[in-house]
Amino acid sequence: MPRSRRAMSEINVVPYIDVMLVLLVIFMITAPLVNPGVIELPSVGKSSQPPELPLEVVIKADASLVLRERSKTTASERAVSSAELVAALREKQKTHPEQAVVIAADKDVRYEEVLKVMDELQKQSVRRVGLLVKPVAR
Image (tube, rainbow, N blue to C red; front, side):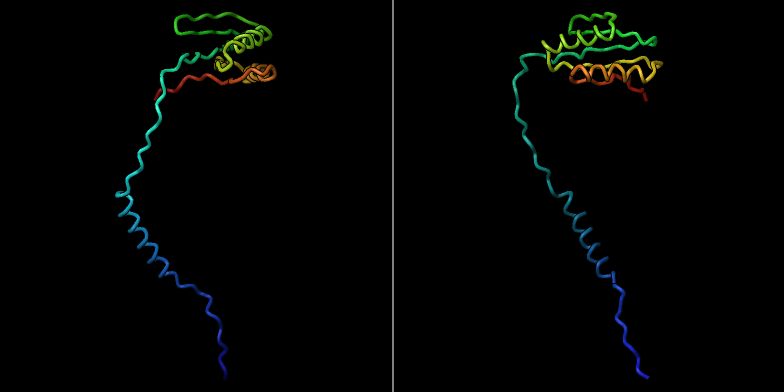
């Protein structure tokens, strides 16, 4: 009775595991010996103009808008309508194009009100708009 020979379809993984463990040991020994390259960053002189503080659009709990402008020495607030807000921000960004605008909303304000203000600013091409949040103390 002739026996048919079948091809062996199993892979012996023991040599692969041995090679992997040897490589692991080599990397564990050489990793602490490799010094990371030190990068010398270029230095620059003091900036001629200090960075501008962002303009703040405050949305109060009753959905009224307040524009808050701060500088290094003074701070001013004024109540504005949506149209006045856009006009004031565009005027400010004509003189300071890189000045950011942040929206600070009361936590009880509906999210829809915040989105309306953001949408209006985006429609009027006001650049660099962000949200102001209070960090959680841990």
